[in-house]
Amino acid sequence: MQDTDRATPTHARRIAHRRALVRVNAYHAPVRPSHARTVGWLVVGVLAVGSAGVLLKAAEAPSATLAAYRLLGGGLPLLTWAAVRGQLRAVGRGAGWLLLAQVALAGHFLLWIASLRDTSVAASVVLVTMQPVFALPLAWAWGEGWAPRSTLYGVALAAAGVAVMAGGDALAGGPAVRGDALAIGGAACAAVYLVAGRRLRARVGVVAYAGAAYSGAGCLVLAYALARGLPLTGFSLHTWALIGAVTLGPQLTGHTALNWALGYLRAETVATAVLGEPVVATALAAVALGERPTAAQWVGGVVILGGVWITVRGELRAVRATVPIRRERGGPG
Image 1 (cartoon, rainbow, N blue to C red):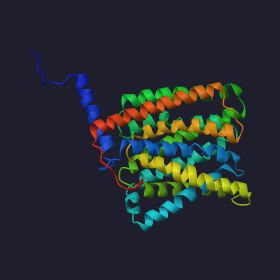
Image 2 (tube, helix red, strand yellow; image 1 turned 180 degrees about the horizontal axis):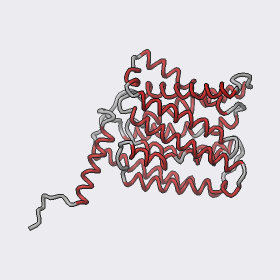
Image 3 (spheres, helix red, strand yellow; image 1 turned 135 degrees about the vertical axis):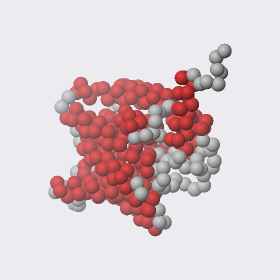
Image 4 (cartoon, rainbow, N blue to C red; image 1 turned 90 degrees about the vertical axis):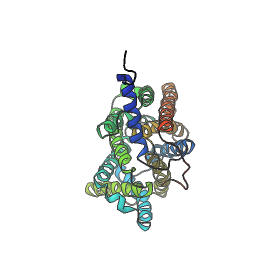
């Protein structure tokens, strides 16, 4: 008679997958916020970062200068607050991951903001949010294990939506292709930033991590701008207002909300949620810049949102099955 206590290969894989989920999802925080709160901060983050493309394209300043100001303007207040509260010691213990996150974030903004000069806001934002394609193998290679099956399905569906939205520029040729290539490079850098940030958020609060990451990346971008002899002053009042808006909205609110979510969700799940950014950016560009979305962009946007919903819903179900949820007091951090 067959030994019923012996696990089949399929059952063994399911057990291993569940244990991996417990390891990946549970080690970040003993107190886990509610699913509604987690989704709420993801939505806030995506809505805020979705306005960045329109604001930056309207600003009349070099790409590196814009990136330096938004990073330093968002990072230095958070870094000061974390220092006052004595939270920076934990950041120092993850110096290697922090440096990687800073370099990747600097590269992300340099490449992506430059892409806005050569292609449309919709195409640039669509391509720069292809982060899950890079985040999935990086997360696996750096010890997070295989993503849940629902994440793979959701990423595939959202990537199909990205392909639909961005397909027109490949036929247009010229500067649009160069802009698209810069945006894809920005996506790869953003994926490295998210996966490294996921590792740091295991033991560092969001204020300390975000302040250190933004400030370090801002210093790197500022050094690049100075080396290139790019102007740092002399801009119009309109441009300064746009720099202030992108610092308060997409940087301080949007990126920090997403970094908060990294403490409770896999990097590729947060990256997939960011795929909702092109939908926001396309709608804003239509209103503010007169860049009318095409039928393909509308269809692609709906497909992207479907993929985001599948990914986030699947991970929250997996977390519910492995980690008990308790209410957490206070805001992000």
